[in-house]
Length: 274
Image (cartoon, rainbow, N blue to C red; front, side):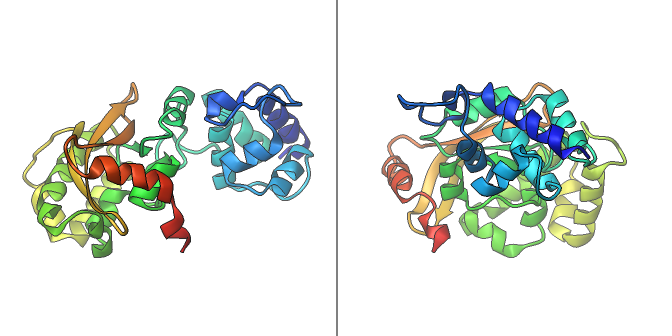
């Protein structure tokens, strides 16, 4: 662990990023060429004081979660992200899972979807990062795979109308089968399938059909606590290796979803704060 070098590295990465690159207003009067410390803290979900201590090479060893957030906030590439973890004395995370690295280009595109609910997920449906409207529409991101929660936690299904549940179960399992084939036979994906087969008869029956279909996009009805049922088109843009996807939601033309999503932009995440 080398916290002094970690602080210098954070400073150098912060200086090369412009506010526009991370979806922040540029402003006319800036004293630094890159991001300010408070802006990095905001993007990483940290307090300003905590981030300042990191740059000064002081304070406690940052957690894995904080390092992941900093790597995404500073748009680090794979080598830079790994270097960040080494300096912090943490093992480099695996290529998959909620700590997986997101390509800076995909994050840059997410930043430009500020007026559209959007998120980046893994092929196992683990949310890596989502924008403000994504949280407002779908709720706070979980550390668990949504597919795993769907078949083990009945409360999770409230996001879709009951009539749609059989459809979502079927397409999620078919999509998962395609994803599992891209993972190591003895890895986390295979372990998740084994666990779900034991935990859910519905999952086991759907898995045994052998059906496979990548979920590229479809029309959905999402139940929102304040807006009611919102009809959206959910579209996916895939990373080159297929392990990650940028998912965004646009209103179905001719439905009240057009006005609902405009209102969502005003409401934001206030309902979660309450």
